[in-house]
Image (cartoon, rainbow, N blue to C red; front, side, top):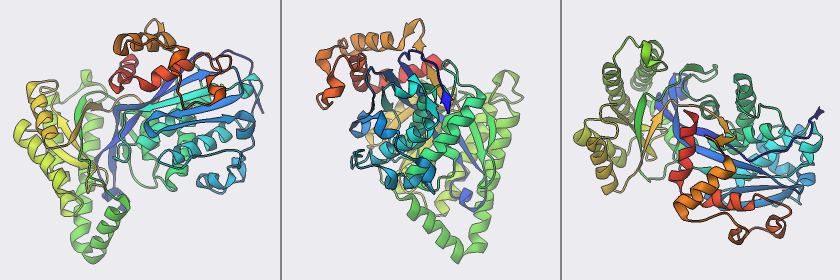
Length: 450
């Protein structure tokens, strides 16, 4: 058992990035390399202490607000599970897991709590807390929203029970976070590759090959990208199956395409490793030349994927607009068939009228655009913003952006009686405020990491 001395927990925020596949989609299924990077679109978990023995999980983005008794959660035995996805068979009748889009997230949380707190004793195991997660990642878009959630939950729980550092997440801490986050991904997806949670934990760029440990290619904010959501639903399973059928029928044609995609991934890895993406100050290649080479292989990678039949008219339209309006290279990211496209924005065009015109043209066609960067930091814990505590920062943002001040009058009407009680949750107003702050304000927390 891990005995932990009493220490008053102050509100803190854990965040983790999404991910984007830069190169290697579909080929990775056949043992080829893929390159992924972390997005500066993140999930943020506000964690606040309670005075009672309840654990409240609030996920405003999927309409989840549920409270557990810690004694009930403590009876969940994950040790008897053959696989994390079997947690549903272990959930006691007393744990009411809601149906709907947030059900898997709640099950993952129950599993992670049962595992992380299994060997913890003392005051911290008895104290209640609230976790409110705001995600800036669109669900089901292939940008790693599930992994970002599981990394934030894992880090928050490990921080609460004292198993990782309270002020900074060390390299050793990240290994532990990643281990638990992968188990959370198993609850959600059964047999995940592990690349999504690795990116969300460690950040930067990773080279991934099935069955091998990921290779860290470095971390930087050098690459400015535009993520464009087609808003076209897709089935990853069906798209992967379609490529397999094509390969089975025409192996002599399809195998060279997969090998070419593999070559593109290796070339990208070489560029990232040897030309200073992680440290531009020592770069042997000027950023213009680096971006030119990346643009070339982005275009080739997309055409190869289109040959495999996994593009979509909406994705082709995005490629056309970004090329004709801004001279930018785009490709599908993820399984294709809809979902999202990735556009490399040259550093000379970042924030320019050209970039704004590209975004305007895409939005005029009904697409949703996200201006962001790829290759940034992984999981982070924030105990404050500048000289302000997390509580003070939220109060300030509410006052500045919503002309609201956290108060007992703005309690969530859906909260149960225990959540409403002032003597149970002194931070209820802060939690309610965090749950309604605009996404653009929540994203400001990311600037605190740099």
